Length: 232
Length: 287
Image (cartoon, rainbow over all chains, first blue to last red; front, side):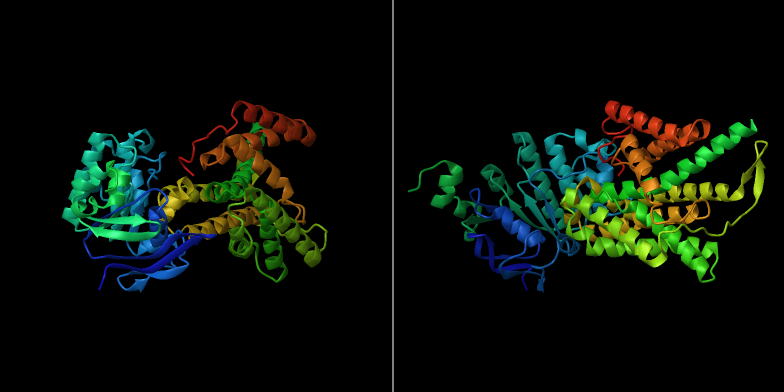
């Protein structure tokens, strides 16, 4: 039984087919990076999994249950929680209050703040955090929901090199210690390489290849788009 | 001293009733970005609920309990049938709720006629306060308003519902992705706002004439209270109601109701000019 199973998924925006018969399977505890050029449908795929969009065909099964027509809050209640590309934190609330909203309790597990390195900033207003810290806080908020599958949309977008390195360590640690299933959209190939996980390559609404970083980095399309090399 | 005390108590009475009305409006706007033009008619329905209960032989107290329940349920129905379909169309919500306001008023005219009614006066005694007799009913109304304000603060700042509501206000999409049922919160909040107006109508019923136009007299100062106090907070409308209500009541008593209207509007224009986002603007910090 696959943990997450997506079969023949289709999504059209008018005449444009953004997701074209896409298949994807994720096993429990698996960490998967999705790469692909802008406009290939990565974020649309996340929107479909999270219930923000409804598919025009195919289905999305989570632990054998069809979730393709569920609303976002119902998908989240199944344990599929998403981190947005632009940090979607509550800037006017404190760091610990952000965690409280996510955990839906006034007394959230503050050890999560230790995990993401923000324990000493628990009482600070979230709006004054640096960009990287906001990204980590949002990861902490996702963890506070006790998720079973985490979707991270470009978790290192806008980060400095040192922040990116710290994010690699954070995600690796979360994956290792919590045995959490995670799917990430990422453009930073150094980040993808450092994570040392399975990589799926998306093109024109389909997954055209999947395997280790070493395998996919040899593909012409990946070399052309990300590694600056001309196709062979 | 006695005259001064009565003046202050009367002003406090009006302020607290205004708080009750403004709070419902502010909560609905804060969470759903809906300016509910039918809020005054929800108040009217609360008063008519008391009237109906008394006409069928029930007591004022039963009417007082039933009014927020009945108006809350009517609010729930209106939210489900009309408001939920136009949430993202701000101007349309104003037009739609204005239409609902006209509809409710005409429904009352058809059912009860355009005439004024009155209900019995409960607690028809006085106590001596600061050397002057003061009606117990008015003290009761003040107590009810204070209890509702405290309850609303508790609801929004000390409960999981409030935490979720504040999450939705600050970032609806994120809240939804965190598993918060934003639709359910919309229903509950609109219903709660309507119930507050219904309760205000019920507590006011023994003090004023009950007629189809009674809502407007409270809707305008309630809107002014929110604009003066600040949108997006709970404390804003309370402070706004304090300023608008006290200015209105004291000026009306000391001079005339016409002067009161003039002073309130001029003061509101000055405050809004100096503080365009209200006295307690907080970018969603509270609500």
